[in-house]
Image 1: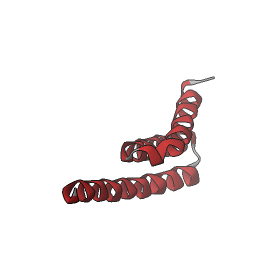
Image 2 (image 1 turned 135 degrees about the horizontal axis):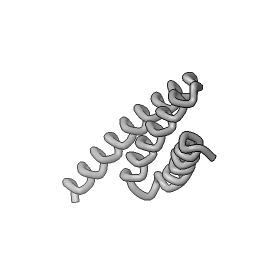
Image 3 (image 1 turned 90 degrees about the vertical axis):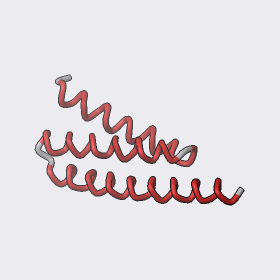
Length: 80
């Protein structure tokens, strides 16, 4: 297995794990965004630019979700 393939395997595995753990903490959502960004980089480096674009979009969506979740948690702590 070459280094690029290993990088892609790590990126996709991280995406799977962090997606499964997302409900536990907003930090898993942010980690999912980072894994999507790594998947996007892999896609572009490998030459599969549509995969790279889709993963970049998922990274943006995940960051927005993370920001929203953090705001909600901060608001709930302020109410308590």
